[in-house]
Length: 133
Image (cartoon, rainbow, N blue to C red; front, side, top):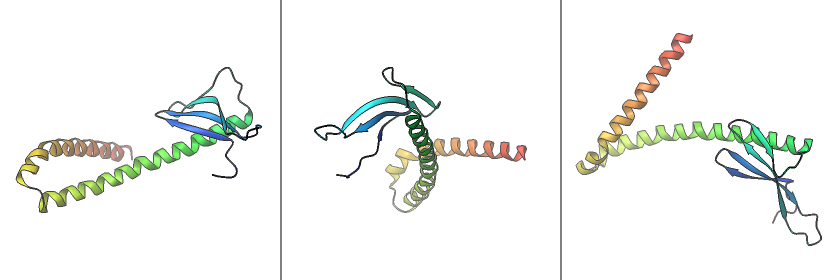
């Protein structure tokens, strides 16, 4: 186990996290986690838990975590899109070289509709960007 634990623990949830203050400075040297806040990443809200007042250190640590979390989520979003491009290429190769007629019949309509929807959206968004310039 790590010799020195961080002062805060963030239990990630869909829209943010529960924030705990980590304490090992007790007689039994047990790890105690005291919930101090709930964070909402989408709207930037920080709610103290249980009538607590957050210290400036608490707020600074929470805000730093929120910034890092937002950067990580943004990175994951674009990484997922790059992976989608790879999957499309892999799917094309599969359809051309390995897929049976039955397999193609099972997925062709769904793929064509999804690709049409994606293409329509991408063309519209590109047009909007060009008109803005």
